Length: 536
Image (cartoon, rainbow, N blue to C red; front, side, top):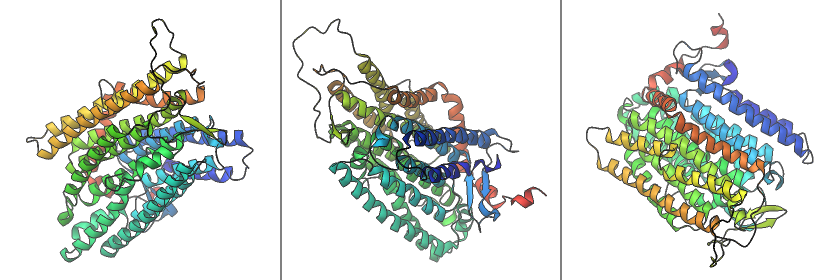
């Protein structure tokens, strides 16, 4: 169990190396290896969550620290699995498995090395969540970005190529900002280990504090761009719409990497006990979150494509999380984490269901034998409703399955009871009302949460009527089990969040408490024994 922390990184990278030894004609073998690896990652990450939360440690919830090379912190590279990072790794594994399951229906055939790139992306995302120092965070960022470049270009089409080139250019510039911010922080503190940074930041001289905050601000811009925060989010809806459905589904976790890093560093470096740096940029986070929610809500209402709705909802989700991080408080953090998990699962399910829904409406063209969505501004599948009696007409099985899943996604994203989306939004509102005096910013956040949910309900209902429930002359296409199963798994996970909301929320409250008490994290990292010392 000691090596469980590094397994979510090493396992997919090892299988990547194995897959490179086989050519593209061994498609069945590659599918079995990659899908088996993704399923194993789900089991490993679930075991990691259990081990961190209530495992064999003397104090449940104590972070598990893995010393690479057996060098103690802060001199060596460390991986840290606490409640937050273990939760994010589990969420990544679930999205990875379902998206890869969906891809083997046909999408992995639209270009070479799909499975290698996909597993490399999972390794990079897991590494970003588990790393304990900022420089290796940059390394894992580059790993996941390199894999995402290949995945976003996977397939054919002019629109996909154009959006991909914009995405690549933006992220290369983001990497430069990342390095500049890291260099400025290291110049002031002399370390990039997160736990050591949290210790040294309280003793930074007042003369150097501005340089430290400038480095943190530049670093924050890189994270905010990855999180899709306005006005740095102009690339997101178009890029996610152009991606293949399984790629867009797993990309739902990509914006959460930026949110995770902001949450992690703000709690460690700029908490209430951080001296002169306490509360740095909290107001900026709040208002940036509000602006992103407004922009995303308007985008949801304005777009006429389901992919556009999903992309702008990702922005609304990021804005909600960012504003809640800026406001702070344990109750709000617990609600924030529940909302993060629920919204990410729901958006991923929506991206998977969009393609068969649009295929049902006839909104695809064939590119190298692979059905691809057409990127138009208006729906094209619906026909004029005829004056005929529809009473007694049997609904085809495909329409019933797609319609049921679509309604489920709509309820989740809009936050209607009794599903997990409603529980998450209600928990956020309840946490905001829990304070003695409700601030104006709290009222703004509550208003935007309600408005964004209403906009999502309107837009999704309009799309459902046009694409699913308007009579069409064409017969509905076939829908394979491989396409239905991953969508059902994601929706079942959302349903499990509703049924098990009590124990899941207790876990979120423990995670929020651990984030507020940074001493546990710092003590676990700085006091982690080397292997030889542990066995004496």
